[in-house]
Amino acid sequence: MSRLRIFSDTRPSEPELATHNYSRIQSELDAIGVRLERWPLKPALSRDASHVEVLDAYRDEVKELVEEYGFRSVDVASVTSDHPDRTALRGKFLEEHSHMEDEVRFFVAGTGLFSMHLRGKVYEVLCEAGDLISVPDATPHWFDMGPEPDFTAIRFFTEADGWIGHFTGSDIAQRFPRYEPGQAG
Image (tube, rainbow, N blue to C red):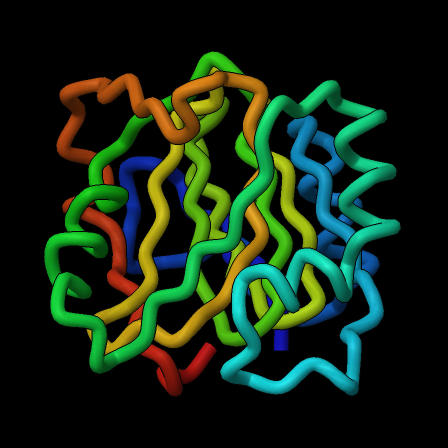
């Protein structure tokens, strides 16, 4: 179930808000310019579908977003607990960074944790299958796929080179809880 927790950026152990109420999550995120919406899942799509099959299943939705944002490329990222580079891949996104484009992801399967650092707060969003999230460009954030990752996401890019992170050098991401699937909250 999707979840939002909001922390003071100086109090990583005490959320000021924790909710699974999707309308409340959307309202809180909308206030900081983050888009979150739920797309229907394609039941005919198997968990081990190829990237081509995933993109084909969501062809209409992808086309609509490409036209809305002007994306130049779209791909599919899949990381599972048996991926040989899972630890390195997890580490790549765990430091606070931003992009010169909106970071837009649609979770086809599995889960991942986005944390945005704005206005003296950390907004931690647990995304699950069916969630589309759009983090505005220049928003400091980090992403945690967990120690045993299990997700498939469609990624959208306006940059020709795909994912380009501009790291802030802050240690804030190290001070906040890591994503451990199955944890309470």
